Amino acid sequence: MIQFALGVDIGGTNTKVALVNDGGDVAGIETFPTGRDQAALIANIREAAGRCRGAATLRGAGVAVAGFINSARDRLSYNPNLQWLEGFPLRDAMADALGVTVALEVDSNASCLGEYRFGAGRGSQRFLCLVAGTGLGVGMIIDGALVRFMGECIGDAGHVVVDANGPECPCGGRGCAEAMVSERTIVQNAQSGATLREVIENARKGDTRAVTELAAAGRALGIAMASLSQIFFPDRIVLAGGLAEAEHLVLPAAEAAFRRTVNTEARARVEVVKASLGWRATVIGAAAPLLL
Image: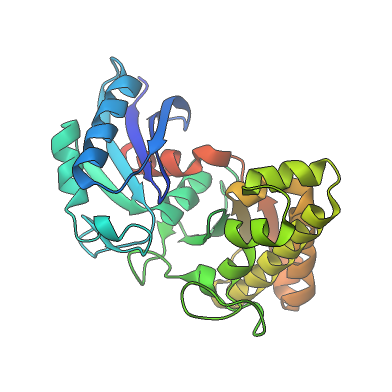
């Protein structure tokens, strides 16, 4: 018998609600602006969930949120883009609204888990997942278990420094990987579209500056992968998120920079591949713990 769970992805800009089955398939999805009001967010998720689930019997709901969560995994503890949600009892409010068991997770962990269970991470023993889009999130799974040592996740690994002379980062540092590969940086430098998607589309049409900036982001990602490999010793690294959708405009540059920068052992044994679940990874991974 097919099992179903809801997957919810709360981002700084948009929120997604999806019905996910135990094969990792998305049966229905809704997207709406996250806004800045706690009660309105809960109400919007409840309404979207009702439309998505239809007559399906749910095993529960997984909610992924950007930022750090507390050790009880019941609320957001830190995210400068979602400060209005910090400290709010999100898990319990969602359980009350949906009438099911709710599991709260960090969004980068959810993306990592989705790819590990149903996507490009299957079969990996030490799986590192980089999610590049608005910012740069990182998740790690070792022998089937998510790595948690800060904020119930791997920490702010997206802020590993890749260029000491690089641009200032919103975190207060300089030359962080996130500062080099974020949508904001790419759009600003490419001057070829108002969004990352538009930059990618223009690069595919031959816009030289867009092509150059996407390749530069790929090289920064490759250096970040090399640095993280020296710490976590993955056997497979997957690139997910909006930047991964640029494919040949980013991935070859990322892998070349990784191979050039990393140590000899990792150069020989670590796979670098594109995520296979695309935009679905986070909602699928959020629902995955309920679909055992």
